Image (tube, rainbow, N blue to C red; front, side, top):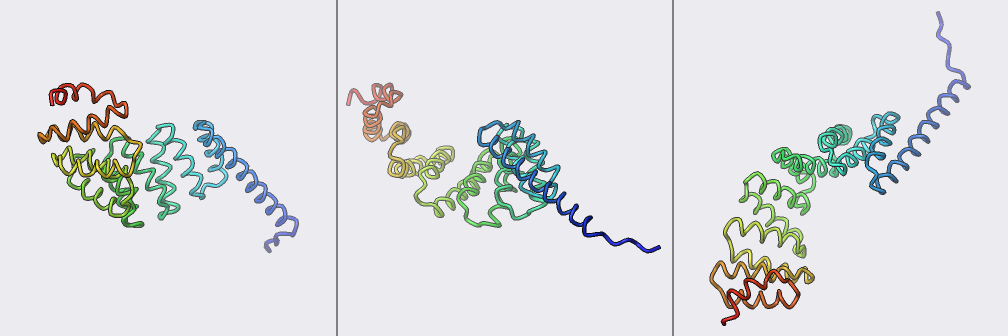
Length: 240
């Protein structure tokens, strides 16, 4: 029995259906993106679900739905969607970033570290991935590894006051007080609006018995209305 060949009309009908589905998918995606920008993450999640039903092999649908779940703090759902996005597009760095963050907020630090490491394999010395991996290392008690990552991150981005601030905080935990002070000196230069740095440096100088330097920092803090410095200033500095 001979099979009938598809007619021109049949082919045209198929093309029209595909075009209609593509147009519908684009319209849903636009609405979903708008809802996400408006922070209506439940609405965005539901719209991305409709988009996925029409485009089940488009990694963007899963990634965007994952970010909606992430922003709504539904980390388990987010992890599932980012995993599917990576199955469809294994080199998509943003999915490693957000899945790593989802694992981190779920206190699954080893999984987070693995995702940040995957990101670094694809983009070595990326300061964002290094910073996040340092956070995960710190949370899991691996502070020496965290310090290595922050050192690398600062080498890659020497003008990031935030990185110096994070390293200063870590050095306090590692009992490297002088190293922490040096990093806070960098923070003072790179983030001139961050006046709390004077109070923090003052407390560190007290720890190493540098009372005169501590008092100088407390005075600077008080000049910038950091009132929390007043008590220590009165205790250690008024009699000098």
